[in-house]
Structure formats: structure tokens, C-alpha cells
Image (cartoon, rainbow, N blue to C red; front, side, top):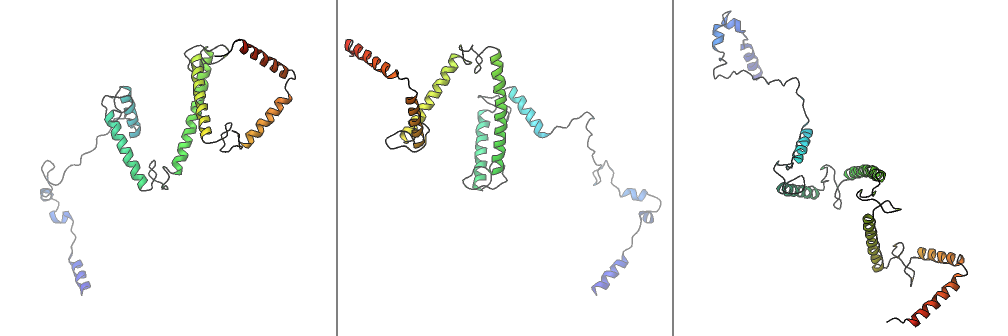
Length: 266
């Protein structure tokens, strides 16, 4: 029954052309078309203005990079554009805001078990970044180290050709050296402090005082390997010793004893 009603409705539909309704006279049809100047529903579509032919489209990332470089050159904050009130590219307010946002984002990613650097890969609870980010960081670090080595080599040759200290480039070097006296003293002081700190740590941890291994020969301060090497060096030194050395050493001791008998120490 329903199918019969549908077919009946279809047969009652009559399709007519506008010419059949209004004839060749379009005056009646124009009455039903709203005027463009009126507030009718028909509106003229606005066309977009064409850009000039010499227009160059810049990537947003490049544009932001150029803007921040210009701000930094003029002494402005690279984020907000206000004058910088500290040493750096950001003002104090933007620096604190950026630090808070970075900390919150990092904590959110770590709590979700996602790498906070890329925000894509999963990580274990004890990790701070994924393997891909670690590999990328290692590659960047190696590249920077290579560039730094080339820069240091060129700088060294430049100062050496100018007859200056090859480290600071401010003062002439010491005679027979390539560094000035101040750079030598500074370097020797740092090396001495480093050795003293290392040896103090080895002494407290009962490590070998030569190589730092966590083991010692009983009653000695060296590990078995260093102790054997020291014995071999002492034996070789005794074999190559000048036979007159013992006699000269005894004579020197006699002169010292005679001196102290004549001028006793207080």
C-alpha cells in the first residue's frame, strides 16, 4: 500500500521551466529577485584583493626569527618587545614566565610517560628523553665540538702569527713558550688544585694513588699493577745507577752533618 502511495505522489510531480511559467517576458521573474543594493538575501560576493606582482611570501618561522633578531639588536625583549632590564635576550618577566611554562610542560609530559623534548615517543620512568632525542643531541654536540676545534685551531694560528699568546691573544708569550706568564700560572694553578682534589678523594676512598683503582696492596698505597710497575722501575733504576753515586751521596751527608754540628738548628 505504501509503495502505491509513493508511486502516486511521484506521478503528481510536474517539472516546469521558468519560460513556461512566465513566458518570454521576464518582468515578472525579475520581481522575485532581490535587488543587490537592497537588504535581501542575495549579496554580491566580495573578491579578495590580489597581491602585487612583486610580493614575496615569507615563512612564519623565518619572519619570527628575523623579528627576534631585530629586537635583540635594538636591545628589546625578543618575546614582548619591551626594553630588556637584565643581561640576556629576555626581560625578567618573560624569563620567569617562560621558565614556569617549560617546567609545567616538562612535568606534564614526564607524568604521562612521554618524552618532554619531542612530545611523541614513550619513555621509561627513569629516563628524561627518548632515544631519538638523545641521538639528535649527541649529533649536534659532535658537530659543535668539531666546529669549536676548527675555530680554536684558526685562532691559535692567528695569534701565533701575530707574535702573541696563543691562548688569550693579549700579551707576548714567555721565552721558549707559547703562552704568556699569566695564562701559564692560571693553568698550572688549576691543574695543581685538580690533582690535589683527586688525590685527596683517592686517599679517603682508599684507592690507588697512581691510577685511582678502588684496590690497594696491603700496607701500600698502590694497586697490584702499579705496585709491580713501581718495583720494575726501581729495579731498572738500581741497575743503571752510577757506581760513584753511593760514594757521592755519603760525602754529601757527611758535609751536611758537619754543617749542622757547626751551625745547629734552633
